[in-house]
Image (cartoon, rainbow, N blue to C red; front, side, top):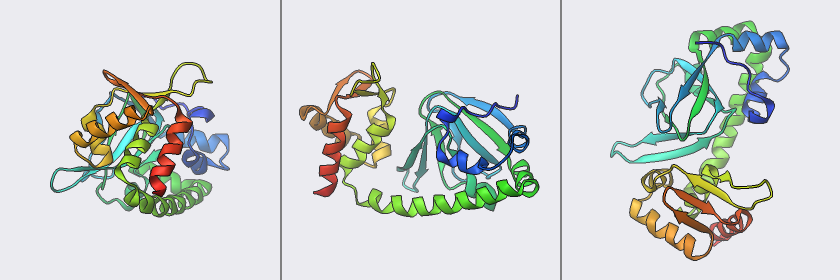
Length: 237
């Protein structure tokens, strides 16, 4: 598989920017040369919990979902990741089995680096080593800040946040609408941690309030700002 080109700046999240901050062109290329591009179809699994943590992944196109399957078979969604996200960083450093699974929500491409190559880059590029150390600290703080509100948010807010993270702008850049497509009600239920029947009722209520409209395979947020204000009120009740 060919080595990938570095993602364009507009597709990068702060996470990858932090990882390569201060590196010169030669050092960046040395890291990219150890990566290979791999493409995934919608709903295809990138990795499963319990698998060996033998690769590091940089998401370059599309969005993916991180989730954990409980012993009773239920799934808990930890987050939806955008291009520029580094996947499996802590696990590949510790060498422990993966604690999360990852699935593509849409056509996705990742740049994959083997664990041995990653450790070699850390050893040979001190600035990269420092950046990764700093990134791990940032991710740890973010995880703590995010876990409390997620646990306390009512289900309606969790559903709204899931829809917002899945939505794409509709029409012109000035449009206030965003659309979610290709996601089933059962998949939404898994992301929110509720039953499918609850999702059906909640979406119908969102539609009754004029927040969304539904048609087969598509959910449209009619006005993003109004939708955000509704979620803020729901969270503060």
